[in-house]
Amino acid sequence: MEHLPLKQIDKTDGAHGQPSLYESDFYQWIQQTAGALKAKAFDQVDWDNVIEEIESMGRSERRELKSRLIVLLEHLLKLHYWSAEGANNERGWRNTIIEQRRQIQLVLDDSPSLRAMLTDIYPDAYRQAREDVLLKSQLPENAVPSAPPYEVAEALSSQSLLA
Figure 1 (cartoon, rainbow, N blue to C red):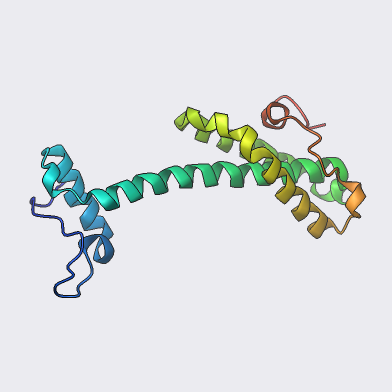
Figure 2: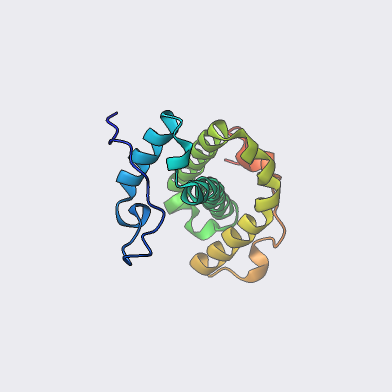
């Protein structure tokens, strides 16, 4: 990987009203920041934006986990409660369930500490999945349980809930 020559990474150029390198050329900012860190030139690192990016990466991982969990739960609910469409869509729903379980496992393999968050995000993910199923299926409210009918581990298990 080629690194640009080290120079002071501007945080902002308030004197001239110009956007900072972080704002104007994100890729170049990454390259210069990586170069400064590798050279241990810590005084040349735009720490505020480095911290912001690291925090953003963590939020992004959590958001991906929750998004995939919503899709998984939505398709489990369709499979179990939307019988009128089951004959036409069951195979696609099963495929989506299998794929989302795989993708969730990959996220958890990359970031095992997210596993602890599953119990926290599960109730809201279920609520959103249920809401989506009710909107898409036009089933009556009482057709899909308001409380999750599956435990987290059961929903994620490749050996369960596909019947």
